[in-house]
Length: 120
Image 1 (tube, rainbow, N blue to C red):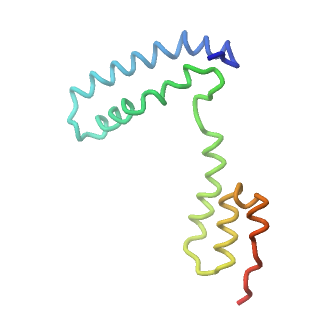
Image 2: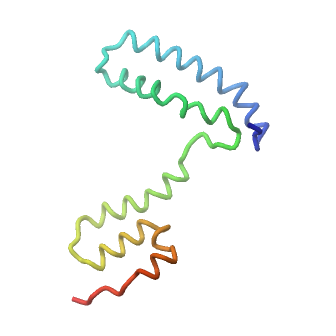
Image 3: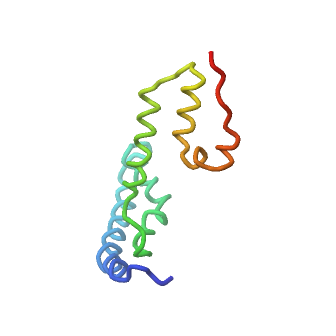
């Protein structure tokens, strides 16, 4: 695959790949010394299971090392729902559902299907 960011890709290959490879070897050694039910052993097992996804950013220069931007964008929705709590108001539930799903809420099909809510 041709990388869009060749300098970033080369840097990751030179610096990150040896570090994360050494970390994986160390983590596998540590698992043998830990109780299988310990939280650390479970974390290392999780890392081993998801290793291909963990190291994917080293294979492509265009991938970011984290997903902080996506998490920040979703945080407002999650906090808004949590602060609102359960509600019995039909209009409030509809507004929350529409705001929490911006793609569905902005699509022409959703707008065409939207009906005014009955007044209570």
